[in-house]
Amino acid sequence: MIGFHLCNKSTHEISLLLNIPRSTVSGNVTNWKQLGTRATQPLSGRPRKMTELGQRMLKRTVRRSCQLSAESIAKDL
Image (cartoon, rainbow, N blue to C red; front, side, top):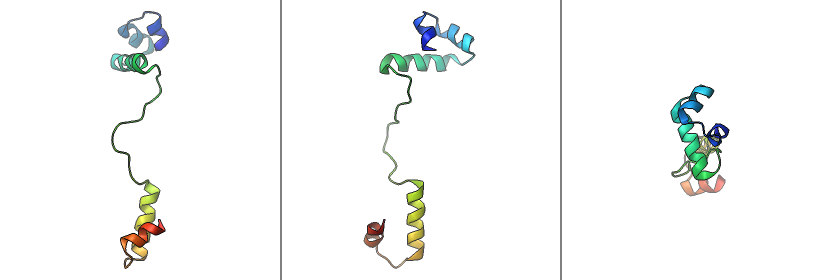
């Protein structure tokens, strides 16, 4: 896609040649121009605090010992 762009092909021509939507071509060329790469960039926003495995471990711990305090459970994890 970028090779076609560097050969002065239009977004429309690239989309016809590769049989992909023009919006995809335009987005990829724009990202390449701004970032210098087509690699997927990390998403913005707050990262998840706990993985799925961590959530399962927490649920299992709480079910097994429902009398424990939150502090002691946190120490165990």
